Length: 211
Ligand code: PAF
Image (tube, rainbow, N blue to C red; front, top):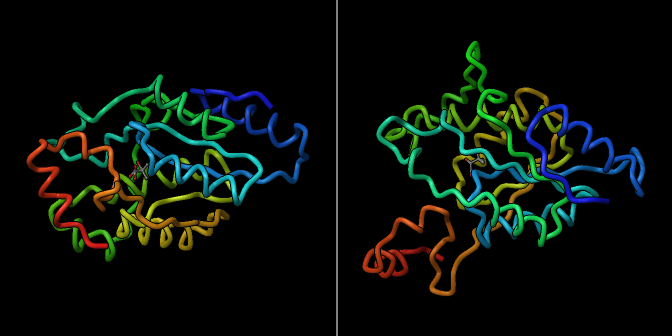
């Protein structure tokens, strides 16, 4: 089947239907790998894992404004759409969903999903709305795609627990699959935000990782 990049819900649903009814059959399973782009080796490992579980693999690229506080890096978050699409395609992704902002959050959007106990501790203390933003967008992506599997990394362990709770509480029929933290050869967890590290800070970060 042809690799497809889709930007609307209608296009996403027809791409999924084409793949489900393609050379496979309507029982073909779908896995989603939600991302904010700036695709790197750790995302690629999520795609590799997705392919072990499902017949069809889609990734989403959406820099979700609701998970950034006003003083955070939304405007400078690394963007590399063309390269991202190529990397996802090369790893065997079938569909890349790049929703427009007003598809995710139209002007009259008025919903926040909260997993209050897990969201208010640890990182949630210093980023009070972050996990609400994550839970809200992940719920939307899982429902929009109706994926059978969703793959996340253990690097964001608190996020992973919140997503598992969200899926269980809303009875979303999607199995959450986790993969271990992907690290560089020095042991630093691979993250899009490593691009912000100066050479000096990268050396320090390499030394303080826990393996
Ligand atoms: O882990 C991330 O990249 C994001 O928090 C996610 C899960 C794609 C939601 O925007």
